[in-house]
Image (cartoon, rainbow, N blue to C red):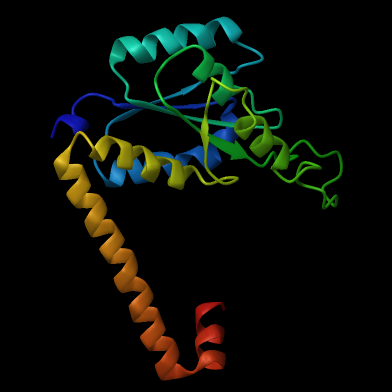
Length: 191
């Protein structure tokens, strides 16, 4: 399997704190045996590195870059501006982990990830970035594999099986719900 020998997907994120979200993309790609390379590249703190990474990704032969960023979320757009490789942006809900008081419940950014989503989706005409939902790194990986499946028939077969597994899971839960009744099912399922 060619897609498991050399990295075809680059996963980048703006900071180490984004890794808790971006690991979702890695887990999906690993489950499908799609090789990827993961790095931290900050659009704001390491702009020269961002440009170098774009050249590196092209030289390595990456087919897709998954770029996660929170807040102003410039990373996906800036990497797309530096390469012709398709970029899938993952808007990340910024967490306020540097609270002064441990009792403070305002753990999330004021915009709830909307700032990141809009920064990624509202790229100027001619410089597109595909975006998934806020914190949906796993969806970015599945979308990347759909692109790769056009080139790799074995991967397409795995994706078809994945969809079948999802279908079967829902059918099984539906039968269980019908058998137990809604009240009992919900109590058991969401303890």
